[in-house]
Structure formats: C-alpha cells, structure tokens
Image (tube, rainbow, N blue to C red):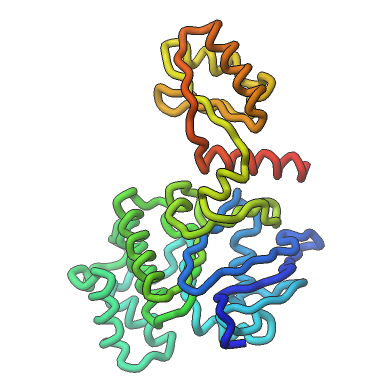
Length: 309
C-alpha cells in the first residue's frame, strides 16, 4: 500500500453515534501535496470524517488508506505521520513557547529535542518570542505556535480543524502563506473552515452537509456546477427593491453587501424577469454580477436542510 500515489483514499466511509449515521458513505481522494478545503455547517460531519481518516476514530463502515496505510488496521502508523491542529489551543498556557515545543518533541520521542525545538522556532519565526509565556500570546501567535507543534516531527499529512477561528486577517494570511509553502515541499493538507476566502486558497474544496458530500472540485468548477445567476442592485431604493424581491419567482437569495444588494437564482429567465420588474418600480440600477462561492454554499446548505427535514 505504501506505494500508492494518493495521500488519502476512502470509500463508503460511515460513522454512527447512537444509531444515527453522522457520516454516510463518504468517498474521498486527495493527492500528495494537495491542499483540500473541507466545508460545511456545524454538525455536518467534517471533524468526524477527519478523525476517521487519521486513525483517531474507527469507522462503522467503509474502507480506505491514509499515507499508504489502512485506516482500520494500521491506525497507529498513520498517527505517527500526521499533524493534527484542533480549533482550540491545546498547548500549555503556563509554559513558554520554547518549553512547549521541547515538551512536544519529547512526546514524539525525538532525539536532540532542544535542537529540534530551536530549528522549529527559527522556521516558524518564533525565535524572538521563545521565552514568552504561551498564555500571553495573541490569537495569531498562538496559532503559529500550534502549527509549529504540529509540524515539528515532519508529518506527511496536516489536518487542520477550523485553524484560524478568532484570528485577525493579517495573521490568517500569514498562516496560509506558510501552509502553501509547506504544500510546495510535499505536505498534504486537509483543512476544515467556514471562511470563504480561505476556501478559495485551497487547490480543491469538498462541501459536506448532514454527513454527505454534496459538491467537490475547484472553486471555478463548483461555481459553474451551481448554474446560479447573479444580479447586483444599487441606488437609493436598493433596500426597498430587495424586500420586494424576497420570495419572488426565480429569486432564491437576496443579500446586502454594503450599498449593493445581490440577487441570486438558478432559473436565469425567471430571475431576470423578477429583477427587471423591480427595476421598473424602484429607483435602482441593475448589473449582471459574478456568483460567489458564498452564494453557492448558502444554496447548498438550504438544499441540504430541505432534504434532511
């Protein structure tokens, strides 16, 4: 199995809790060096799927491999080769940055722990703060420390579960620059996120809802697959027009973006007719717009909720 090209390959992956399937027949393949975004609402099964892939949770059905090892029979081998960064900061807040990394290096059973920690501090730009107590760090620096702890044993796969929650935009951008550099050097990354701009920085994205994958592909592919059309309304009556269009035939979404209103629907002809009628009644300007990833995901979420109800 170790010669397989794919970093992750699973088929019909299923997990039940209390008799209810929270992950249902998931098929997923991720190439080595690829950054894949895992998106979906809270409770959709993202974290459960990630934990099954990396050997932390045993599936109730299905099969697969991670880094060439069987996810059921070789889970311990997988764990040694994976870095897993959780949403919640899980290092010791009363230790310094350096002390935390030395401790983690010992947990991994690494040789020359102080040398490894020193190199990691240098690689992640943490050396100047090495004596700072972790609990005093900002969200962005805690995130950087958590990433350092995850990659210091040189994993082949990095699993990130909502890694930038509560982090400012500058720190988020720097974090993603680091992730892309790691991927260029061969690290495979699977990241769950709610941020659309982060999803757009992934090579591919997978959208999961109620335990089932409902869309996958590049951003451009998923937007194209949605077949959604978008119009943008501006002008002093834009908010009044938005209220009138809500629920109109052909209109599936009405969302304000600053001074603009985005009107979205999958029936292009009906949507256009509704918008043109609004244009005749209100003091607005109408322009054709680009459908966004957020537009697509709101629609996918609505569809999934309707099917689940």
